[in-house]
Picture 1: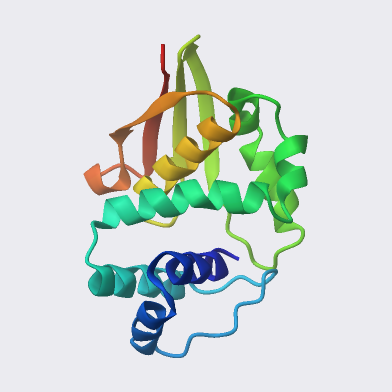
Picture 2: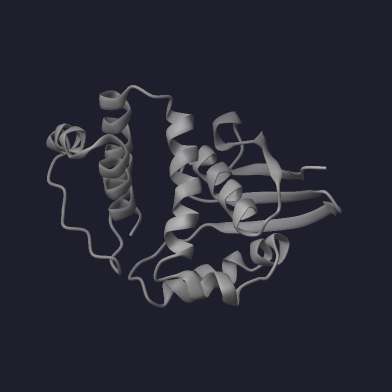
Length: 178
């Protein structure tokens, strides 16, 4: 599902010609089936080759993809999950593990991340993103930006720590705009 989204986003944003150049450098891209899990190698290859071909900053690309993922999934076939798992950003974030567990029943071999969320005060939400997949800090930042927009919770997202800084998780803060 993520890989199909990446491909469609790259095609829509940069054109089919660019996608053709990118895909020609990736060994054996399968026809991705939504309910199947694929090796992360495909995802990382798509991103790496896109960065080489387009020449943009990796963090900016990942953040854009994360933000767009929320729009894609909330307005698509997974929209009902967004409605079921929370009516506010904090409630939704607290229920992400439950949502991923429900999705895991539909997707073979899904390896979902885990989230720990705490309301620090009325304006700050702490999010710990725990995953075996390194390098997705800015994708998660984009996800949080997209969720803030969806829940009409104007905010800035601050990365406090990441896998890249030696931890086994990412820590982010959602700071509500005052």
